Amino acid sequence: MEALSNLFNQINGIVWGPAMLVLILGTGIYLMLGLRLIPFRKLIYGFQMLWQGRSSTAEGDITPFNALMTSLSATIGTGNIAGVATAIFLGGPGALFWMWCTALLGMATKYAEAVCAVHYRETDEAGNHVGGPMYYIKNGLKSRWAWLGTVFAFFGAIAGFGIGNTVQANSVADVLNSSLGVPHLVTGVTLAALVGLVLIGGIRWIAEVAGKLVPFMGIAYVAGGLVILAIHADKIPHAFSLIFTYAFTPVAAAGGFAGAAVWAAIRFGVARGVFSNEAGLGSAPIAQAAARTNSPVQQGVIAMLETFIDTIIVCSITGLVIIISGAWTSGATGASLSSAAFEQALPNFGGYIVTFGSAVFAFTTLLGWSFYGEKCVQYLFGFKSIVPFRVLWVLVIPIGAVAQLNLVWLVADTLNALMAIPNLIALLLLSPVIFKLTRDYFTSKASE
Image (cartoon, rainbow, N blue to C red):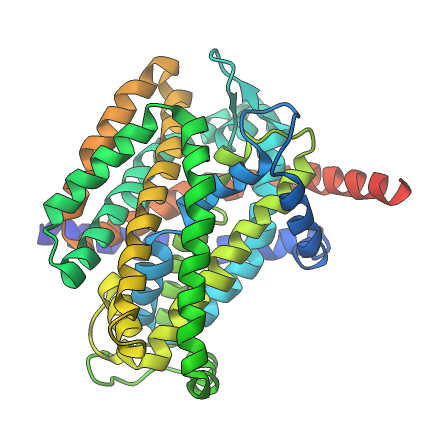
């Protein structure tokens, strides 16, 4: 196990090295400028389109609202609870600053992904709308780039078992064990049974469950965090001071915190930011492609809200609670650190916010990512591969629940990077199409 961990450590150091950070942040900057800061200019418009998208009769399988809820179900997960805690544990408070930077640029990336997903989507033999990076690579780029779509689908299928399956099961099992004493295996088997029941109905059942659970649990978690921040409002200025100071200054060792260089803050802030909001990964456009819409741009402005909600709102609340509680110097990490921070800041109640938030978020993420992995496998092996994939997906959940946390996170980080590379290359090559579709849409809107 140690040899395997060392191997992935070496690979992780390469794939999350300077070149990868330049590719992620550079793509975000290029798209943000090429789209003339559309995430900032059209944020309110995005919320208007989301509200209107609660019902739609346009071509597609699920409403635009449920498409966002499905992609949010996959992103609002342990990345918002355990991922933020791990970033701060490894990179210090400054990691949160770099998560914010990744998210702001990621809004442009997420917009571009959704535009391409809807514009280049197809209909499969069952009449379902399918799309995502593998399809916009195949249909949008010349034939010499077709191999890139296959590479994405391959890494996407494997990555799902890391970011969307084992990590989720592991984190929720960890927090339920530390908070309520529930054995890891019991949590894993229970999650597997619940996920299996929902997967029987495919994307429509997944979307319906996500459409109900994600808004309810998201609002409950945010409300709980805001109560804690209101109670400790006097500590918030100091928390922001630590965040901005340690984003550019090495952090000395303190308590159980081993200290961190600025590079660690950047690396883990960006890596965990991408893990949390998945901007650039190419996962969310797989769900966005199923939306009932006739406009790629309309779905794009809805899709970019995912990154805003996930990181700017939810992750920020988790990070601020961890910092103001002082728990970040305790030596704890992952979901256990978040749980300890919430409990310390709000005794006898705060820990339960994280416990139940982790359980529901992990469950919905398992559902969302099962759909992503399923579509990648379908692209590679055809429609008949869906049922065997679903069975395998359910069987792996208990294994993830009892696995070693550090190795699970390490594998997930590595697979994330390998999945993102072909998608980011495709977005750069398709950027002229994205810019033109955006200009044409808003020009026609202005003339109405």
